[in-house]
Amino acid sequence: MENGYINPAPSPLRKIITVASIAAGIQFGWALQLSLLTPYVQTLGVPHAWAAFIWLCGPISGLLVQPIVGYNSDRCTSRFGRRRPFIVIGALSVSIAVFLIGFAKDIGHHAGDSLKKTTKPRAVAIFVVGFWILDVANNMLQGPCRALLADLSANDHKKMRTANGWFSFFMAVGNVLGYAAGSYSHLYKIFPFTKTTACDMYCANLKSCFTIDIMILLLVTVTAVTTVKEDPFTKQIQDDGSKESTPFIGEMIAAFKSLKKPMWILLLVTCLNWIAWFPFLLFDTDWMGKEIYGGEAKGDAHKIKLYGDGVRAGALGLMINSIVLGLTSLGLEPAGRLIGGVKNLWAIVNFILCACLASTVLITKMAEAWRQHHGSPLTHPPLNITGSALAVFGVLGIPLAVTYSIPFALASIYCSSTGGGQGLSLGVLNLSIVIPQMFVSVISGPLDDAFGGGNLPAFVLGSIAAAVSALLAILALPNPPKQVSLSPGMGGGH
Image 1 (spheres, rainbow, N blue to C red):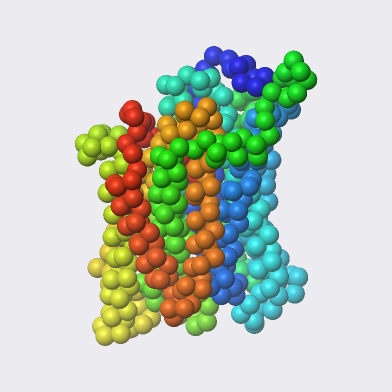
Image 2 (spheres, helix red, strand yellow):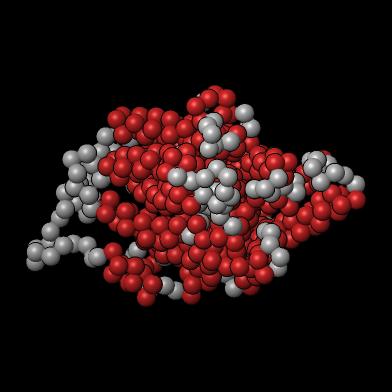
């Protein structure tokens, strides 16, 4: 029994798979965010240095929305259940948000934006509103989905591992579909209405991708909430008339006061790890379009075409990254045993992350040298350069699989002695993920401008943070007292 909710017997596997499939819709949209939105916002006239500030909505909403929604969904007394109302509201909000993002140029044009001007202020305003709604809605949707899987598992550990595995599987499916859609340049032909006077081919492709995202998300959500039922939740009152549970803020404060040294070290290593990751996750496709292909998001038509080709190549790289991530996740547990524990595994892959981020400097210099001495500035770079860049995307799937698994598993173990449970421990760990994301969002733009523009300064900062994170994992992070499951399903989405 959990705060007035009686756990029934574990649900059939088909119900767990049905709910887990929502992850495909969530990750499809998230993949589009990572691969297409930073370049898209620059076509609206937002400078590169300011693009990072727009991404602040993700960590801010992760810091505030997901813990609050999770806390309230635990106590929701709707006759439709604890989780399903939040899942439905989240899915509808995502649909509205991606419509605003995709049609921002059209709405801005009808509201008075000039096609002759580089900056389109009304389209930017529509985009920003939609983008913030999207991240809030994603956080509103993802937390209750994971909680519903836990409810359906009914504290059966084997069922829980199975549910996490299926959730991870559908995350990979959504990533691959999203990156594949983002890398296909003629998707707009399926939806001819997307290409308009204000919206060119690149913009039309983005609208087409988000149209598919809405269709997939609503299909899996409607299927899940109509076929999987919940028992209503009844609040319990203690004998003295006070509520059984403490307020959410009180629980978080108590959790921080009771943290032991291993958990504090874990938070520090995780924080540095995400300072390393976020610059690449934010600007990976922009790096392909600008530094590798030599294009520009606005200006000369040939440069714009090169930039779009580079962005689509980056989306292909992200699809490769997702495939490697999925395959790597299957071998994490034996790999950890082979090299002497999870902390050693985490350290090794952080050194791999460090090397990959540092290699972006070398690959960029190779591309610049080729354009200067061996080729036309308006042609694609040769295969050895694009292949090297795509190889970086692929290899980064290995440390990303570990990032999505080991920190969350260790947090559950380190916090078990405090009685907070997995939900509260992951809530605490979430702070060490979103705070560095906000830090990188604020500093990356000015840092890039201070060194002449481009993405390399933020990537170098990430490489340094990855190296420090690896050293701390080896020297300071204690090994867990017992074997821990390394399924990436324990981790949260971006």
